[in-house]
Length: 549
Ligand code: CFM
Image (cartoon, rainbow, N blue to C red; front, top):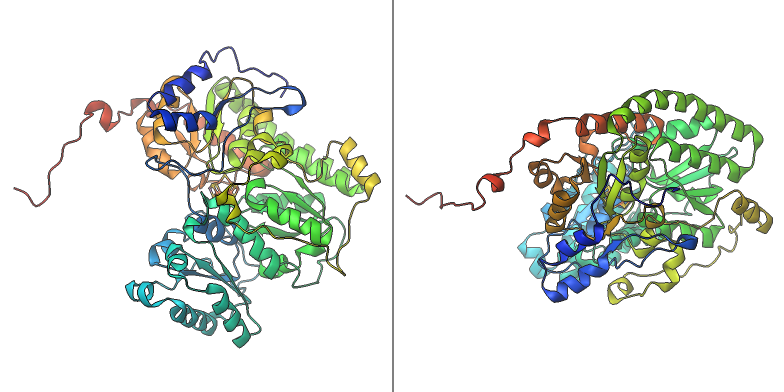
């Protein structure tokens, strides 16, 4: 960003806001939170202050985070339509992870398998908790094969599975021996496995890499073949990205894992490039595919029109083909003409307004550019569960202290494949790309792109959100369903950036237009200012038992 300080119109001092937040806490907690709440300052070579992240939430604090099971089953594998997924655990885990993320899919034909409308679970009861649940899991697999005969089955462990010691991996092996044409694999993604859903992402990446990728050597053929990693088709984002990519002339081999199929994962190693959309959830896969198969990766962003255009140009520059670059320019010019018509109009009504973004591990960064395009400024942002590299850039990875919680998740040692390792770019090509601004295996992080004086907060909670609203009075607050109604009762509109409030897509060019229009409607509506929260009218809630007289 060229202008490195926040607009003069924003007179709030972020250090004062930080103090105000901390003074509510006991001394020990305040000391820890002080390391997780940072006033941003970008110095030479994109140096930013260190932020503490990916550590345990302090007990008693109402966190926005989810669990490792959610990160594995819901996030990484959830959007895959033809891997039949069985939740091994009590029914609630399966039920509450059933399509709530709004990941969409479009089977290739009417008869192609799609298991996403089903929630399959072993429905553990007290009996299994006491005597073990392996027998029930075997039965569930038998039943699923009998009904659907899928190509692949994924088994997802919930907390009690780890606590009672069910060996899901040996069940998977036995059942695969019995049904050799079904690829059956299990995930030790018990909810408590990490400090957040981030642990589940890593567990999912490891298993999909060892048990699925590389199982099929059939390529889709043609030039400019790539995979998109970390795009989950929330609200139809992947459909819009696919449309653009196809029109530009790239061949999209697979997407991990929005609108995807098992065979595409299994043969993903035949593509020549991996572009990474959500760094947090899938950077492990990108690294492992590079080490084993020689496929380079770089970071892209399809959120915002400018970011989409920049990402497409980089993808074309990677393949270094004049015809491809021309087509990409034509597509950008045509799409931008449509975008500009709406952007200009919306900008005139939104300019100078303030946004705040507190979302998982990518979107708090990705969506800032969309707001910038309509003249809005992000004064505070943070992730629920990202790591220091998502905040400060991958250059800090060697300095990250590996604690016991991180050590709990297996780090695979990957060697080049004996026959299939094929480095796609030599040193001259890597140099050329660097000169063109494409840093392979790089991600600069969110903080270097935010202005000085902005407030960065990791693992935000309700108390802190209330202080932010009181102090900055934002025009819009972006977060999720757990935050939505508390914020709106405070008179500030909340835009859900997880589920998109049942709307979308927001990716690509058409998605940007959707987003501009919705933000325009939200920040220029007076309705929220009429809201009166119950606790403002009557701070003490009184109640009595329903059965008492
Ligand atoms: Fe990646 Fe995601 Fe996100 Fe994420 Fe998520 Fe999500 Fe998210 Mo909700 S994979 S880190 S674990 S971009 S479900 S599609 S919106 S918290 S910012």
